[in-house]
Image 1 (cartoon, helix red, strand yellow):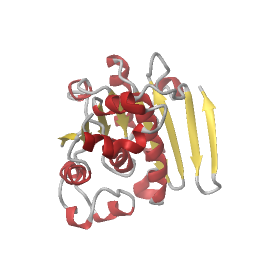
Image 2 (image 1 turned 90 degrees about the horizontal axis):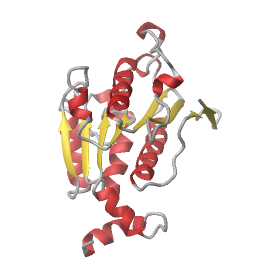
Image 3 (image 1 turned 90 degrees about the vertical axis):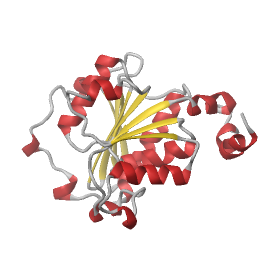
Image 4 (image 1 turned 45 degrees about the horizontal axis):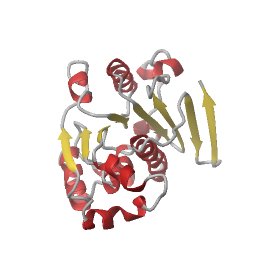
Length: 235
């Protein structure tokens, strides 16, 4: 490992459970983050900072002004531009050693397999159930581990699916709810720091998985930041 790379990641390398070998695994990893919004922003930030060597981001939206209270990798200067372009600028400014691929497409049944198959770990930061179930089902068919998160108001959820034979989203919720029955951030809002908390947990799970540290499977973590309670449910 070259001197400048070691210096950059030294505070990770100094962790006994990571070390040089763990950092090499991070540098050689291929991670796809689906969604560059509230959850995707902290995930992308911390994975790029940690040195994930090949980072893909899939998002088909443009940056809007109302995104900026929580989507911290975007700025006023990128409002109106494609989110993947805004993310590319952020990643290049943060860590030029990361190989970034922007996928300016909506994940749908016709492209999901082709896109997801190119990565080792999938991180789901999408904001609707149809996409979440599509991502989950595709990961299950491809044998890809999936880091899952969701947010609303003051509450969030985090889970790991399909990792080394563990259960997946349909084992927890067999069928997606109808769209009209699901509250969303557009109608009920989200406090900006919440996705930072949930997204950081998702990024931590991703890095632990890359470095082959123990992670919790078949378990849903519930985060209530209004009453500041964290609860886990086995399934």
